[in-house]
Amino acid sequence: MSSFTTKNKVYPNEKIDQLCLSEKGNALILMYEKMVKNGYDKLDNSKVDIAYEDFELKLMKKTVRDIFSRFKIKTILDYGSGGCDWSASKFDEKGKSAMQYFQLDSVNYYEPARNIDERKLVDCVISFDVLEHIYISDVPAVLNNIFTFAKKLVVLNIACYEALALLPNGENAHITVRHPQWWKGMVDSVSINFPNVKVLLLTSLSKGKAHQFPIFSDAARRQDQRFSVSY
Image (cartoon, rainbow, N blue to C red; front, side, top):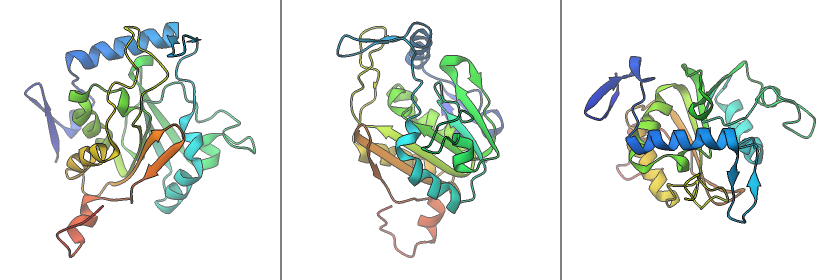
């Protein structure tokens, strides 16, 4: 049984929902709650009244659908779901919902800024444009939390550039902007504790232009006859 440690406490998987963030991490959630309630300012001095309603997955839907089909994904946890509604129509050009498009049986949501917590064990945990919003010291704990609820697959899309959105304190909303290889190393270091969970990692240096790393798992590495592996 794997576990992780934050604030000198060990949380085994059975109690992983007790995700312990740093003081700054909790302060950020309060900021995101304000943005959901009041909207937010942008770099161009305009204002968005309805926060985080964009379904960013639309930009990568064909790639993700192929992966879901390959691994027979039927249940999903949308981790950091914002205002996404997987049952709403017009996700694709034919008017299908995301659930219909991906042929899913169920979708659960986790969005602490909206007080939504439906975390449970599912086939796949998907997290689109979330981790760059996490305070850097909390990234390992959040990744551990993501992996804990995945039976088969974790799908991560991470923006590696500054956002147009601003936090209520005036800082850029993408507070952890790092190189794609930094994120790959971070995910690698967590995935070793969940060897049978496969990972699809997408990183973007600009909006809509994602780099797809080869799908990997630590179990695959262990079965590889080589010591030096590039995935």
